[in-house]
Length: 277
Length: 234
Image (tube, rainbow over all chains, first blue to last red; front, side):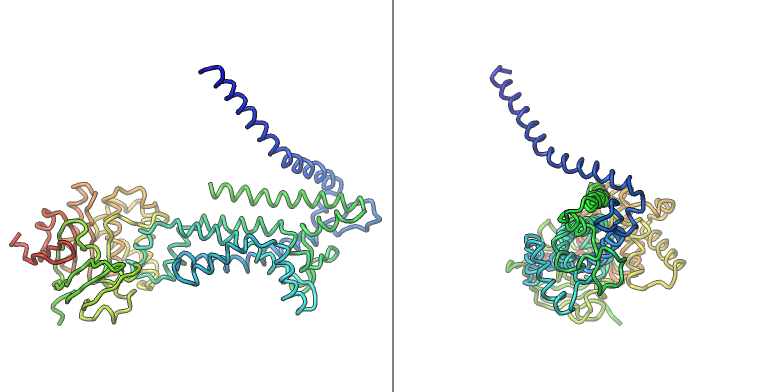
């Protein structure tokens, strides 16, 4: 190989490595900060950090994040219960009736929803649910989060259904199965991996969303879940709220909560990666 | 009493404005093997899919004429009941790859509520596999996926899956294309044994196979019936 080409090759390799390190460095910095600071908090408090109540701002202890953790789980569950069936039905419409006006409209709408800033969805839900209901609630937060996660779930389900070979559709219809049975029995069992992946990606997004919760759940950090119509807490909103306060013990709690959130997210993401293989 | 399982009169069919079938009229006798033979692209498969209205699932299809299946105009049939009574088996073996061999056979009867309990279902699955001459080869592997089977065995599995619905008519679209001679022979044997109980319509471009199997032979070319004839005339 001529020397000039060898030199170019080495310069290019060096450039690629440097850019890769520059790209990964912020992620590494964020992860290491969360892991180091989060561990400090969790080790100082122990397991009660996960189920305890928050401490007073004047206390030296960071307290616990129990109500917010339960709130997050409630919102994740409810938003999936609302968002997943809607996304599934939308994907079935788009895949089974791709040329129809409704099929195309659903596809465009679901994909456009992905581009809408999530805080706008929070404001919309505030206007149409929080104001008429007269207060913040788990319902409002779950509906807002479900609207945010819907397009992500939709995209994964739609891809999974679209990848089903046409011979299987023909086989199913040849057996006299109706479109509903074909979709709900044959397609869902064939695409179950994709459907599960969609659920995991939805859960992962639901666990970390903050903006849609700002105007919808009220941030109840001090009492455990009291009902779907009552204000509720959530980990992402707790982190946001605590970091805005001037209290060092709340900052510590926010680091600990960040590590909990990161762990949940990484677990779901790892499962997602394994399934989508 | 019905004389013919399928009776077609003046069928013309267009897909996206292009005419595929021209003025087709034919009759398929009950409990016999009727073979439709002709070169590729002659409209044989389209004709087969029109009989049980699978063609309705395709876009931009229009057809005129009259098709009577088991004494009833196909337009008056519920399409799902029609497809169950006249089951279509595709040229490419298409078992459900994510289901076990057992589930592939059981799916139709279960979803059509044909069986009362597991015991009856087990018997039906065994019966269908025996009819398709596959039972001995898969009886110890019923829980495994059909991917372990050869192409010919997969095609017989598809025939067994169709038979489990207890159809009156079996519509076979080149079932032995791309299959080794041994499996082809077995499938032909299956078809000969079946025609005592049901009507078989077989599409093929293999003249030897047509000669071996046909009680009635129909020639098709470029969407038209060319020489309807008895097998003796071949």
